[in-house]
Image 1 (spheres, rainbow, N blue to C red):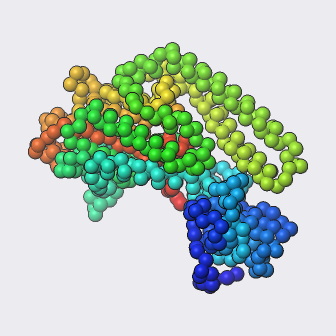
Image 2 (image 1 turned 90 degrees about the vertical axis):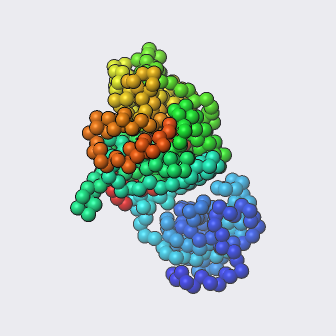
Image 3 (image 1 turned 90 degrees about the horizontal axis):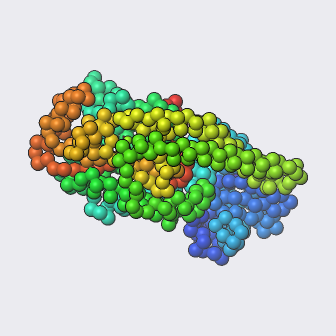
Amino acid sequence: MTGINEFQNNTDIRSMTIDSLVQHIGETVTLKGWLHQKRGSKGLFFMVLRDGTGMVQCVVNQGKVDATSWDNASSTTQESSLIVTGEILKDERQIGGIEIQASQIEVFQIVKDYPITPKSHGIDFLMDHRHLWLRSRRPWAIMRVRNRIIMSIHNFFQERGFLQMDAPLLTKNAVEGTSTLFEIDYFGSSAYLTQSGQLHGEVMAMAFNKIYTFGPVFRAEKSKTRRHLTEFWMIEPEMAFYDLDMNMTLAEDFLIRIASDAIEDCHEELDLLGRDLDWLRRVQPPFPRITYTDAVELLHSDQTQVMVQKHIEQLQQERSDLEQERTANRQNYGQLKEWKKRRIDAREIEINIRMDQIDEELRNLPQWGKSAEQFEWGGDFGGSDETLLTWHFDRPIIVHRYPESVKAFYMKRDPEDDRLALGMDILAPEGFGEIIGGGQRADDLTFLEEQVQRHRLPQDAFEWYFDLRRYGTVPHSGFGLGLERTVAWICGLEHIREAIPFPRMLGRLSP
Ligand code: 4AD
Ligand code: MG
């Protein structure tokens, strides 16, 4: 085996990453990466190399490489690290439309027993091996979409003159209720990990007009759902002189931008994830704006029950189609070529995962229908209520004017109806549910002091926040977008845990 420092010989051959190969067809280049998979024998190997920027197939002909290179090619295993030198050839049938005709293979390390094989692994196993799983194709696609979304977010706000500012993560104040606070010892007194940058965001909006924060926030969520993390990233714009309507319009434009940028720039990734782009193409104005009260009526409607029934039938149909496909795939399996077997194995994993999801949904749906029917005005929507609501629409919906009892202390009341808060949530379609929460802020000092008292929050910890209402108070609004929920929605992920490199959830703190 060669040492890393000995690769100084090919000085006139350009080292490249896989994502830039297409522009250099015909050139001979050097690629550094890891072996994703390999097939072949008898003088010929097809090695799929990945380098993090993409994958490319490298053809190794025994007759066209030196003996050491051939030995290296023969002994490489999954995730072995290596250097491939070769010519870039055009080949439409291959990944990325190109192929490398290898002339030299050098090795950093030959790997023994990489834990994640192409065979089926349960989700817990994969999560325990997240540090390695991140190298696989699915996380590759998801993390690239995540990165694109982050770029869209900054571009959107920067183009509109918002200042990106940072709220502290260590605080003395609860923002979103005291039940989900992580408490820490701060030199002998207690402090909290922030649940939201909003209160400091309001301060910064009074100083800089339009700002947004983009940082991690923490929620001690005891619930084990597919939508909850204990550490996640939130984007929180806060705007002076914005009322609820202006806030909703900004949020709508914002989501449209995120979706259209993803469609434009993430074909390969979304295609790999099997995302139905029509859903994203329909993210167009205007988003339906419905009041909480109308939403409750919708939950109570016969239409909702009909929809639940229709959904059950669709799922049953999908399940039986999948079962048929699986049976068909298993016939003649023994006679198939290795690579075909592998493709069928991979498909079987997909089928099994989807069937588990379908079974779970089929178990839950009747209960969802019942709780929608029995939903009482004044309560907060559960995950299933949100899911059913979004099924009525083909694009994100904005639900506004919630009962003040289910919203945070800082919300302004509706001047038309004191039972209501001027809050709004945006629910993503296809059952993804809430991705944005926000509203217009209370701007009256006396009212806000009463609210802090009523919510049993410590007055003195909020004095600085009250100062905003003492010194030049103005109407203002803002919202928070959950990054991981947005990534899950854009990518069409069943569970939020795949939307962040290292998820933190109830029962998961490692790797
Ligand atoms: O609705 P939330 O709790 O609103 C706030 O924190 C406001 N202070 C935001 C503001 O007005 N500046 O959270 C906002 C968003 C949710 O809509 C959701 O997308 C995401 O944050 N979120 C979570 N994401 C993952 N895991 C959790 N446990 C989440 N809780 C909220
Ligand atoms: Mg919320």
